[in-house]
Amino acid sequence: MSIKGIPFGKYESAAVITGAAGGMGRIYAGLLAENGYCLIMVDISGENLAKAADEVRGLVDKSGLDPDGKFRILTLAQDLSQMDAASKVGEAAAGFGVPVDILINNAGLFFFREMASTDKNKLSAIMMVHNYTPLMLCREFLPAMKERKHGYILNISSLAAWMPWPAVGMYANTKRFIKAFSRSLRVECRGTGVSVTTAYFGAVDTPLYSLKPSLRRLAVRIYVMIPPRKAVEKALKAMFGRRKQLMPGLINKIFLPLIAILPDWIIGPVYGLVKKHVKGL
Image 1 (tube, helix red, strand yellow):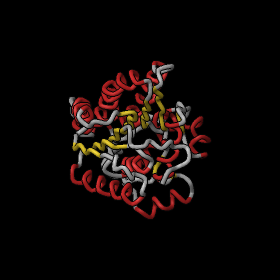
Image 2 (cartoon, rainbow, N blue to C red; image 1 turned 135 degrees about the horizontal axis):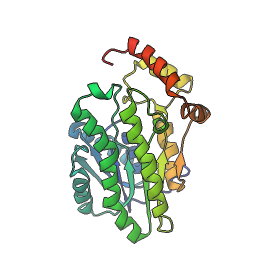
Image 3 (cartoon, rainbow, N blue to C red; image 1 turned 90 degrees about the vertical axis):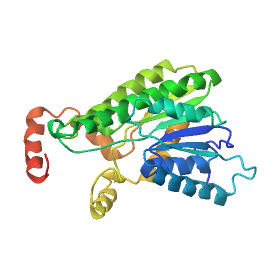
Image 4 (cartoon, rainbow, N blue to C red; image 1 turned 180 degrees about the horizontal axis):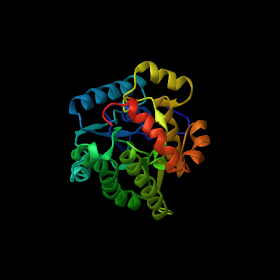
């Protein structure tokens, strides 16, 4: 179903979506496909990616929005923590036959653990997936977008970019890099026809957070968490509207000035209480 605020693409351009096999990535893929865009879906899980692609193709077939059969979809099982991941995505896109006008750096990792006790491979992976590979993907696709004078980049940061707190410090600081990098890239792209939008989500109701289903439902009811489809729709509308950023959720906007200035002498004791109740910290 075509959504107001999302221009229909007529299946003449493609979107690269990382982390596309599930969660918000799968929703991005479905909505863009229904709104006339071909897809290059990237994820580490080839099996889940194939299932997601079949579901998306079914949505397009059922919608009746592709009478000419122009919709195309490519899946790429790729570990984005690898140094050559962006090049592999670029190579796949080059042979796709549909120009990439949209890049959505959606893939993400999350863990709640102190740095000194976190596996070294996990520390490396979160920096690669959140920072290095999105940077390289922008470098991979931006030149052609500029040449065509048309393109959209959506980078997913987080409210946590203002919250480099204990046990989530690696997640928060990698998201902070996305925040700063996206701003500089946005300025560099002014007047080129390419826009860079940054999404600062708070908690979104996805499996990224290992919460019990009952707690997730409660968090959504009290507006601590936002439903994933709502988050994706807002992000896409902001991207196509060429807005520089979005931060959905009134609670996020209210608490942002407070969480950004909390001193260590408050955070420390609170974290001490948390450690008593969380195993492994």
